[in-house]
Image (tube, rainbow, N blue to C red):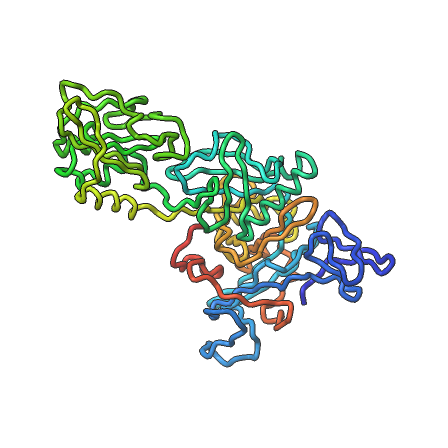
Length: 496
């Protein structure tokens, strides 16, 4: 039942695939350059099974629910409980042809339609959030794979370092190898596989969606609880009376308890401590050290290196000083001797608990990969004869956009530029074509009446039940934390 691209010509038993701009001639028994289409006995077929989501299947398999409203009509696919994704649906490049599947369903008495297609995205990329304090490299530094530029470091946000990979210039604007390597990296990351990246003048990092980053061969365990100032705000009460001074070492904002507002409110006595770096506000210091992979994302291994001499008028012998990083991974305890010099001592049991509390409050360090693509181009012509009406319908929230059934975030502004968390999409949902470009599933769901109003291809609409069982179709369970695409407002939780 899967509609295949048209066979434009036949030559020496080869058939020509027009599913993408490459236009391969495919020999019998062979697959095209994309590995998505093949020549099977002279017939052009989509290799991967077409995926549908079943709301009733908790674990995989073809199960007919015992309880259904009304009599069972013998169909395995029930409109209200089955969502047809674009994964494995195929394409209809060029997009002047209707999308491969335009499927109608009756949902709670309302006629709905879902238009599905595997879009070919030459203009796409991924945004990667790496939970770590460690220094990956300077902002705007080039990120490479196999020596080729595939993206760059963008900004540090909270306890994470952001990377931007792919995009039109790396895919199409550089050398042929740069485009191919970029496409490979994007495909691996979108399909949940690891990718090894190097940052110019920075670290080597292994990134994998939903997994901890590996930085210079070390697995990152914790995301910091916050900056040094925030850490003081969270734990100041727990230090009160147990220690005289606390310094929370952080590359961005290093906090000092006695000067911090939290310390003032608790009546913490001034300690005469002298911090290096640039004082921002009371108890908050910037640039106490250079960025690195040491304490709190700095380049220091000795925390005392960020301290100047204590003020002789304020400090006192026996002053108790705790220095700790924002993950609790690094900590040290000191007491001032008669010369007001810090002498390291064993961490008292009364403070050990607070350090462990910092560690406990850290989130597990993960890599988050968001695929980002623009569906505002010719792909829309496969949905409607008047493409701009689809864009307006999406902006007006009449059309719900999903990627393999997963919720997406649609950017404001022109076009239909969307992002999706790849871990919420069924496995191996993404493909590629060697133009190079990524192939990503996308579905548009809306009322049938609205579809007609925006100039949809009404003569290609067919009921979901007409798809029928097929060996080339695969039912997978719907993720319970994803909104059901026919009722997105009932989602338990949605990040889209």
